[in-house]
Image (cartoon, rainbow, N blue to C red; front, side, top):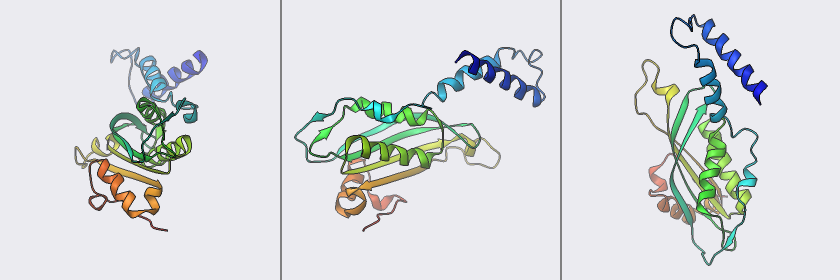
Length: 199
C-alpha cells in the first residue's frame, strides 16, 4: 500500500510540473502527498464487495414499501476526476418481510460512490445491489447530484442538478406499485423524466 501511494505521489508531482507549476515557488511542496492521500480515501470503494455490507437481515411483518431518503454522498466523475455530489433516495419492496438495517444503505451508497464513477452507473449499481442482496421484489433508486465538471467550466449554469433513476422488479412491471414507490420518495412518477416499462 505504501509503494502504491508513493507512486501516486510521484505521478501527481510530475503532473503538476507538466502543467508548468513550480511547486516550491508556489508553496505547494506537500500538495502531491496531500492529493494522493485524498484520492486514496475517495477511491477506497474500489475492490469492496457490496454483498459483504448487508450482514444479518431481519424478519418483519411489513408487506409495504420501505424507503430511505436523502442519503448524502460525494463521488468523483471518471471523465474529469472532478467531484459530483448530492443525495440518494431509495425504496424497496421486501421479500417475505425480510429487511436490512437502515445504516446498511448508507454504507452501500458510500461503497459505490467511493470509486471513479458515472452517476448513471452508480444509480444502476445501487439498484442491482439492493435487488440481489435483499432478494427485494421491487427496487427504485433516485440520485440527484451536482456535477462540478458541468458547473465549473465556462458557459455552464451554476447549480444545475442531474437526476437519474433505476426501477427494478415489481416497480418496473406494475404501474401501481411504481407510482406508490415514487410517492413514498416524495414525488410522482409523472413529474420525473423516468419512464415506466410495462412487460
